[in-house]
Length: 291
Image (cartoon, rainbow, N blue to C red):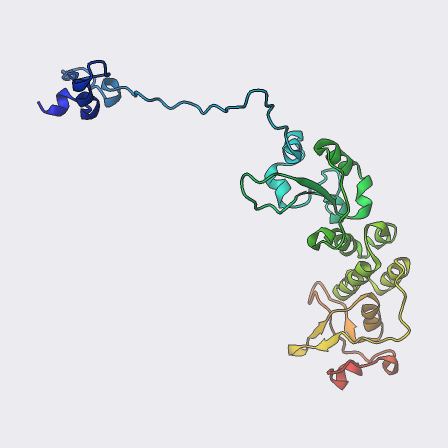
């Protein structure tokens, strides 16, 4: 038998030799016998300091802080805090395209998402486009959060809604809807979107002309394509707006992309319809301008 058989914990035992009222004092550990369970440490020396749940102390007369806009949004079931922090809120009753209406409003934290833990949580609602303020989903989010959604133009990614509305609908299937909903976008965004979709072959030249006219984008007097540049491997490097893309296809400079072969536009191999009216950009080869 060792000292550990008599004194399981020397610290409290030595203190009990000085103070007779100190618990537990020396005690003898019962020796195990055959057929009986060997006592564990917790049977012999129970926990003198059990872990208790933390108690929140509130000053007398002070009411707890009311839930902020994010907490009310999460409680309503519209979105979790993680989903709401990723970006705009998704309207479950709207199709995914155009994204301007499918994600019409964003709950934005003033000062950015990464702040000190004790920093005040001040929230704002930002609209995807100015015309999204009248959507039922936006009205519901305003009612739940107690905030008023505002349109904040030219603030980086918050103005992407107008671009998404144009680029998602500037196709042969959606151009009429885009032409009738110009309050969600701008003529400049429509022109850029037409240039992209004409080059990819998802918008015909005839529908591109109708869409540009409906959007109020005037056709230029000269048929020039200064943004077409020859690239490596007989490819093209270009960033065309709407009318440039229309003129480039009509004049035989480029062929719209083919989904079975090449998705992007590539140089045309047929003669140009109106070579004399094409202004060759500086730095391009004469063969490209004469095609």
